[in-house]
Structures are given as C-alpha cells and as structure tokens.
Image 1 (cartoon, helix red, strand yellow):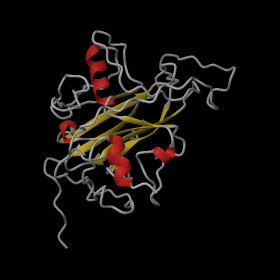
Image 2 (cartoon, helix red, strand yellow):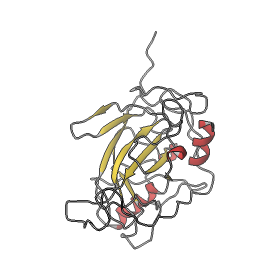
Image 3 (spheres, rainbow, N blue to C red):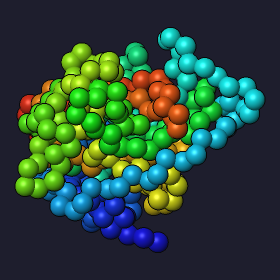
Length: 279
C-alpha cells in the first residue's frame, strides 16, 4: 500500500502540517474522528512546485439522474448542476474529523486553532442534469467576469493577506485570497477573480483509490460513497483562515456549465488556541 504521507504531500504539493493533534506523516494508521480543535502547526509550507494541471473535462454523458431522452432545463431557483455530496475539513493525512457543531440550516463548523495545516474537501455527484461534475480549476480572464472555474468556491472573509492578485500561490510572490461579503455568485469581475483565486489551489480526483482522504482502515476513498469527483486543497499558512468564524460557500458546474445547489461550511479559529487539559 502507498504511504499516506507520500500520497497526500506529493499530490497536493505541500508538506503535511500537524493538525488536530496528529501528525500526517508520523501516523501509521488514521485516527478516529474527533471534535478536538485543529492544532496550530509549527510551520505550514507553501507549494514550491508547478501548479497542478487539471484533468481534461470529460465528454458529457447522461446518468441515472437524467435518463437519455429526458433532458432537464435550468429554471430560476432550480439549479440542475452537480450536487455537493461532501463539504468539510479533514486532517492533512486525509483522516476524517467531526465538525464542532452543525447549525439548524445544516451548516457544519470545524474548529482550527491555527487556521491552516488541514485540508478542505469538496465532493460532488451528478444533479438533475445527469451530467458529471466538471473539473476545470482555473479560468481567469481579465475583464471577463463570465470566465469561471467549474469549482466555484469563495470565502466571506480574507484568507491570508487577502491579496487581489489571482492564483498567487507560488514563490516568490505568494498571497492570500480576498473575501466576498455577503456571499454571492453574481457575475462581477471582483467575485470571479476571488473564485478563480481560491479554486486554482485545489486538485481534482476522480477515482476513490486516488482520493486525498482515507477510511478508518487506511484505504484511500472518497468521503461519500455517492461522490464521483473530489476536489482537495491543503490550507497553507499564506492563505490561512483569520481568527473568528469564516463562512465558505461552494457550488460545482457540470460538463455543460450548469451550476448546482450551493453548500456552505464554517471554519472557526479561536483568538487564543485552546490549552491542553491537565491530567
């Protein structure tokens, strides 16, 4: 079996940092999900390799959600694109962690003492259109707000320094991601730039045995059995979360550009990291 440390660190392009009290590289087997906060890493390196080249978008094909001969058209208030089957945070070694809480709207909150050193995971499956989730992660065009990636994800607060430069994830000029408040997917240049800036830092996975996440027995697998596509991003310190609560919103487009329903989650970073309990 592949080493989880090598599998996660090399494919995401960032050395896995210590989070949730566990080391992604020292763990020989995945730990059980816990509600303990994500521990602040001593250092969260940023990528020093060329950006990942997204897998080519597959040819559109019907699925069980929309049988051949019964096309579904988008209507106002009725998104027909991919459904988000999982949206949350996991440890840097790919093992799961329970959210601190889930509110009445079904929005989970994950606790992070350092704001970085863990992995954000988005998974999707075909929606009403029956078309597969598309995989383009970067589609920036200056002056063209309609040009967007297929993974449309945004934060309502600045991540890192909130740099307005798009996809500035490589040395020597490494920057953060500007926030969009209130959350909106309106086709403006500012919003499209922020979406491209965050999406370009993810990687796509289309086979469960190539996932960035692992099961309790150590096997690589998607978080949801229904998922057909997974998107993962290791949160580096350069674009880490600020103190307080940050709301993330995401939707995914299918292979014909139809967006699906929006899903949200929160990352909570306390002003003061929790102190370990005395024995």
